[in-house]
Length: 178
Image 1 (cartoon, rainbow, N blue to C red):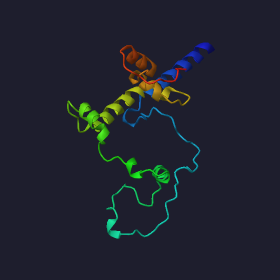
Image 2 (image 1 turned 120 degrees about the vertical axis):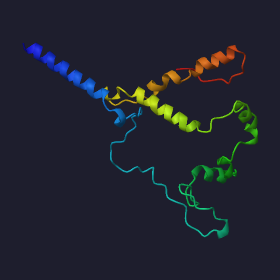
Image 3 (image 1 turned 90 degrees about the vertical axis):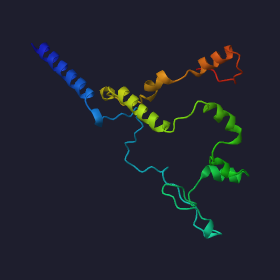
Image 4 (image 1 turned 30 degrees about the vertical axis):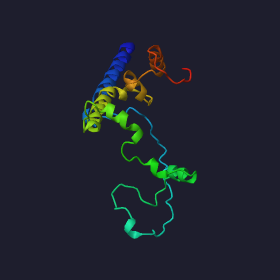
């Protein structure tokens, strides 16, 4: 009698868990990465002190204010490092297609381009993540399911290198697959 009651309770709890995992719909969390910081403390890496304020040599040469754009007092560690080593920090900011990439760009766009490809991919990826996150609530321990979800879309670099080598394409050496 007692065993039957425990079995019924176990089945009832299992069904309740299954039904709760199937629900959610629009409000369901479709994130596949579990990179949460539950400490509630400040993020010390988010605070970067600005450069000291100084009057520009020519006020007419100041850039037009743009919402969301950078400020001349914002830190840019990469550009500062390039300038300190004698390089041209302006080359870090992309300004269209470089001369060395025009042939590649012309070949890649020979059949035309889709102007809203980023929006299309964002919608398709959100739908894919929604489908792959259906049973994420069933996990008792939080895990990062990103690699698991996108594995069917990823390439095996070692297999691709071997495939290209068999075709006679010169390939660079690669570290061994561990």
